[in-house]
Image (cartoon, rainbow, N blue to C red; front, side, top):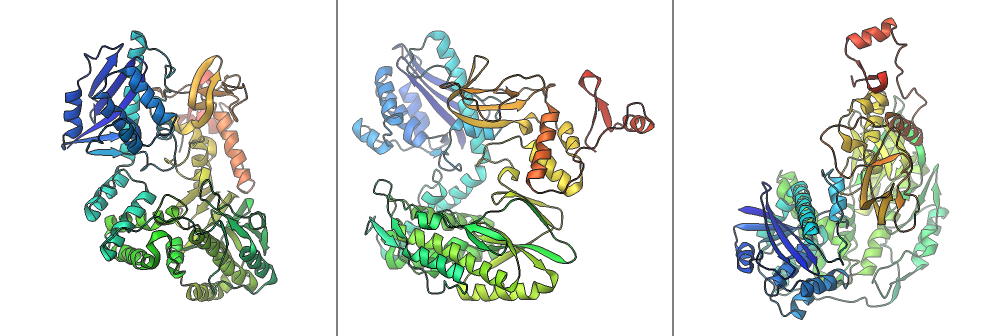
Length: 631
């Protein structure tokens, strides 16, 4: 199979479709000022219809393939530009586009990765998260008439987009491969679908296998409703009995425009204090409210995390509800998939296990979509509220015995337990599991450093680290914010490495970068930077980056030097002191102990200094300054 990456550019007098192989070889088809001699419809059709070619795009299902299909029958660039505007500005979906243009949707061996990637951000932002070499916005205003020189610039720009598409596809290769396996299993193409879309497709296929027909779409039966808790949700303290009463009597109103339920203010405004910790209930789950605090295990104290296994899937089955068009068949279908997944996991079949995990975790998201056959706002609210109240039951039982809970986040809690109370803790958790039908998994921690509940560093007894939020690894799900700083902080907390050692030794400039979306585009010193921008902090760099539309300052951009193109060599003007200071502030923000964060060099020409120099542990940097190498 030959894989081709595709992107198109559309202007009033210019059209380009660019294909690129995995080896970087490109083939372009273009129309310029009504000259279509560089455009070969039959050759394009042969590429699209060749089953040996796999076409990969970013948003190709709803844009590139429909527009390219039209271009093969109509080479008028003005008509193509108007059609492009109807999709982009009018948000016209592909099926409507094909119908309105009198076109037949082509059968293409095609993978569109826009829904496979996590979140809903632009290709440029994904490129920034992947540290792509070039971060480039559209160089020519989309309403412009293109001249010959600009057409050349657009070819370069379009090639960079297909390079970034390939980069993103490579990062998502495991997810796409899982989707290939599932496509063969369920007899439908799942390669371009999100986790939630896959969940619905698989559940519908299983429903049809059982009933012989597809589940119908349904609408909300009423405009509002009240939460109906399962009978096992009970509390023993007046505080939490009051919380349950508020949850039961708060009216849940369905937004007629979105079909979503907004958490009532009477619930969202509650701050529930149990022991020394406070909690808030929300649509996204239970969250404790700690900040700037650290907890440690020692010979007298156990620090452990109890996560609920398959939390939402188990809750959805235990409540025996009938979401959407699945009605009484939901538990049969969904429960069968859960048991199949657990059996595959225990058997070591991780491909099957991971595939079915996508279905289990993706199902819940569809219960809030009015376009889904799983749409069931009451089911969604009952799941989230029950999950949070159920965790509060466990917290109440532990705190009542005198075992503190120091953190809670959606599907788990962190407990700080005296060694002598370990048996009582296990008994309380076991009773809770038996009462609720849920199971927990335990992870021991040596230390927990929290900026807040969503941003923390947890150190396990073996020295490995679980970082969340800004302390988590760089990923497709979040914009990098100077990742060298959390890396240096973690090295300091786990190994005692002074933060300046880690920072000064690093020669990967991507770890020093900050990526940000700037609505309307950014500007610095009359240089336009686009909407997706990245920078590092440089010595001697003056001024800030500003919003192009109103001149407002982009947050934390003082001393920022834009770096839209990553150079081959490490910049010589990195402001190490800025990053060291940032690490010191992070350490204070996570409640770390007062320690010397930076190891100072001995006095120059002292015996200690000469020993470090002679052993290569320090080197002479710019301006004659000596600096540490990582040891």
